[in-house]
Length: 422
Ligand code: PMP
Image (cartoon, rainbow, N blue to C red):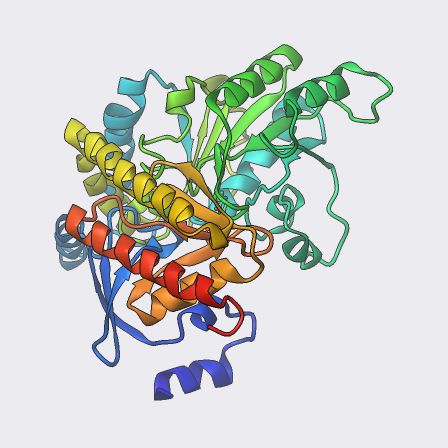
């Protein structure tokens, strides 16, 4: 066992998790590859849980960041004005929001996903004067108390140690065999339902942690309609599904909806540097100055790389390449499901946010474990880790994508032989 792992095992809290699934010490990473202490090379089909959609250590972003540091550019400044911030805001408006006819004010909360979610919930309550939030089965929104209160996973919820209140869980698309929104609307219409009109609904268009469940576009459109009808704010949590993961910059674009509030983090900085933004329809921007404060709001190094990352979106062929490669992934997963009926598998997801759910207990984790041994990093998702989840960087070249898919196929083949002992 490596000396470095020994130190971590001895002194880091048992709360650590990913090191258990990927028990090695990584030393270097470039684009879609990582290397460990022994020099073993891995294909990265994990992408920092969606924080590295452009791969590791992108040359252009790195150069911009190194130049900025060498010039002693401002690193920390709370939310004082900096050129790095102004440049990012301007480019985000020009490259992302304006072409999509989206008009949002940009709020910088703390730099993590859960920080943007907390700010969204707080603002929705402040704007509407209502207390409750509707969330959905399978939803995951972060580990602080507000975010946990709208998260489905019972193990994560129990970690809160206190009752999680002022939220109501409703059935996500396809949770049951009939239209879940008929049920949701009935709750809102009926004075006897016990469900008050909420401040907001918080939705992931594709549930990342919850098992790669993709809501249909019609379902999302209907959610928007219901929100409009009742004056409920629609929050789209695009922390994981955003920044190109499902094929477009925002995951909700193809559904043709315009959320009131959008949460972004993970791949926003493009370089794995912490950064989050909460996008707010201008009329909802009723904060008092400083009402939602924080020391690490707005991270200048992240602004520098995030600005450089937007170059990808100036080139239309980028989206096209995501679509083309996601078709390769989808076809390969369909083939695995049909070639290995023992997997009892179902392909799930959209774009580069896909996976296979297996009805066989423990099998998805077994596949991920075998992949790791063969040099491919991939995690599982879902309440019982029943889904193995493919999250390669969007920039991965076709040849290496195909190499990775072949490793997954081999790992499935080995795992289904004897799922328990293999
Ligand atoms: N929302 C979603 C949809 C997420 O997937 C995550 C993280 N997996 C979060 C929020 C929380 O992000 P963070 O871990 O950065 O707090």
